[in-house]
Image (cartoon, rainbow, N blue to C red):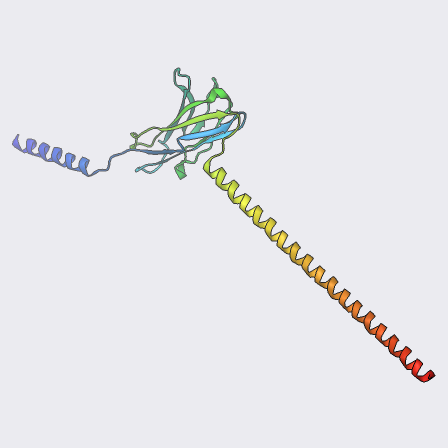
Amino acid sequence: MYGKSAIRAVLLLLGIQLTALWPTAAVEIYTSRVLEAVNGTDARLKCTFSSFAPVGDALTVTWNFRPLDGGPEQFVFYYHIDPFQPMSGRFKDRVSWDGNPERYDASIFLWKLQFDDNGTYTCQVKNPPDVDGVIGEIRLSVVHTVRFSEIHFLALAIGSACALMIIIVIVVVLFQHYRKKRWAERAHKVVEIKSKEEERLNQEKRVSVYLEDTD
């Protein structure tokens, strides 16, 4: 009797130690958090993840939607070995799978955005035994036109600077060409003047010689 109790105690202690040594199973989710897109266009809702366990057939991805004006959460998309699109609701025929589990990508594509699509999209990934973790969120804002971000301003500034440099180079090249052309014209005029002056002096010399011979 004491032998069985001792074995149980050892097994319990060993189980506690193994639990302490085994890393906590939790899936880490990474999203853009905020996304802005123009009405009528398409948008990729990016969701990537990391998992301690290797990705297998047990992996599941669930996308849901919480409207901006409140209301119940709505189903958007589900993936388990194969993608499962919604058969009804606002996202029917408007969502497609754009992920790759082997690359830890659980993204989807949302087509033909509408103003009613404003809200929060949640991405939940379970990869047993990693089933816990924070659910990823993306707050989508559908607008008439996309506002300029810092990147857009930076790109615009760089583009403007490059255009200005090109214009300056063109102006300098044209100015140098114009100067060379003016110098060439002046040199040509100087040669013509010298030639005419030499011709005039030669003519006067010939006249002077003729008059001396006549005398």
